[in-house]
Image 1 (cartoon, one colour):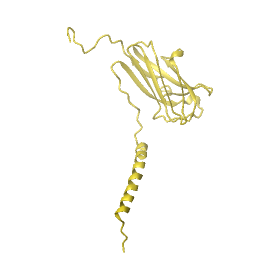
Image 2 (image 1 turned 45 degrees about the vertical axis):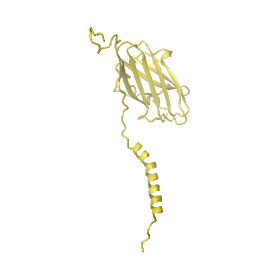
Image 3 (image 1 turned 90 degrees about the vertical axis):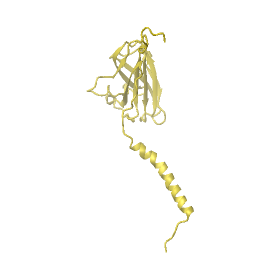
Image 4 (image 1 turned 180 degrees about the vertical axis):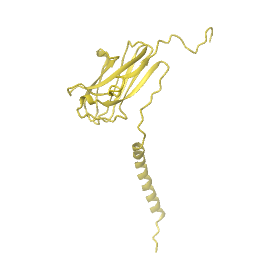
Length: 190
């Protein structure tokens, strides 16, 4: 004689399977997401570039990070202001204080072109700062994340500066000053 399940048992089993699938599906999806470089749309008045932030092999202190989610963004506006933003994700440098320095066109900057941050208890941290007086044209920017307590300089650096075959630093463009609306017609009263 076959044993039949009651409606209550079937609903309970179906609910349990639903909960199990709901808790597993996000993990599976995250594991199979394609590893792609984040994209940033450039706006009319700026030249935006983004690169991954990587552990710098030139200073091997055993540093690690999630390079798919660690990045640097540089953005330059027609008024000569350069914006630098970055994110360090899942590094093994927990509760560590860092300073960020830049090298623009192979010239080390003044003190105004730096920032500092401290990673949290899982090794995440972020930074953001601006500097000015960039002239219109193409520039390179090397971003270095340096430890305040570990000797030896940079622990993390942007990917093009970490590659011997690449131009050192991120290439970005500062646009010329925009004096008038390019869409406005000459002689128009509106």
